Length: 407
Image 1 (cartoon, rainbow, N blue to C red):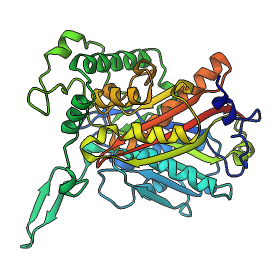
Image 2 (tube, rainbow, N blue to C red):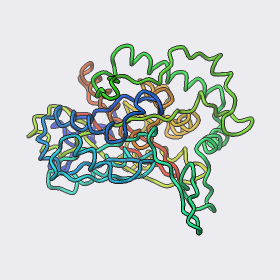
Image 3 (tube, rainbow, N blue to C red):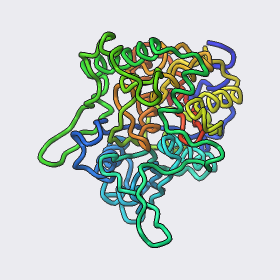
Image 4 (cartoon, helix red, strand yellow):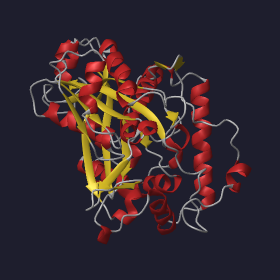
């Protein structure tokens, strides 16, 4: 353990020198199953995905529902209407509990958690439910209204003014692959490993304690449906370029769209103790940065670099890393930019195998880190330093640094 690591956490479990009433901590984290869009969860709209997760969090953390100060939820392609408020009421929270929906596209879920942590740091010992949700299956059709009043439907919003370049996600992934020298073989190998890890995690019950089963349409869904046990290298090699002729980014080394929800209970260290929490994940810091929109896939690395530099942490200090695997090319490029061995990241697989639920994905990263850190502590009795990071459409990235600790 380096000197930088030791300086982050004191023996009492709080960030060294921090006021416990202003030290943000996550005491519980849960998620829904992550299922392919237009698949097993297609009958559930965003509040239907999120409400059971919120209700389970309140119960698991032994929180009085009336004590929740706000519900802060990320969402990227919903129909508006403040899904956070809708889902909070659907979850059975009192009408006195407000809701706030935030949109930073793919980063929305992680940014909602970051916002909650900053509100805790502002003081007052508040308690928040924060996370993200996306029902891509039920995303509304979107249109601009022309001068004559007719509707002009579009498949996705513009993320930046045209003079900055506004590439589709797959095209941007090709740009990153080319500029950072990430070969097709490496992308395929990484994606295959993600599937194999996720399959093994599902088989051994690793995900069981973090998943809230969802009911609807006469069925109960309690597991992810994306990981493919039958996937092998020869099959991966047969996939053609998906976005740029002659390129290296394919459907096999790219994520697929998914429906999902994930959230955490965020409060101060002081209040966590009064709730009877014995362990939790301290939020040490969060950063969001902007990058060239043509290289949007590298945004997470720049956010993480600024975050680690500000906290005096080297890449070798990090025990657990969760990166949103939208594309294998950008995942490899970001990890290597930071000096993180790609083998070390996403130990139970990532979005390449599980799917990308847009606004939910950043919160899924945090839920996965919480589960991994808890298991690590149970086995080795050591706290883990954990990093979550995600690249964002329009040329941005968000990263968050955590420390799992005994209270």
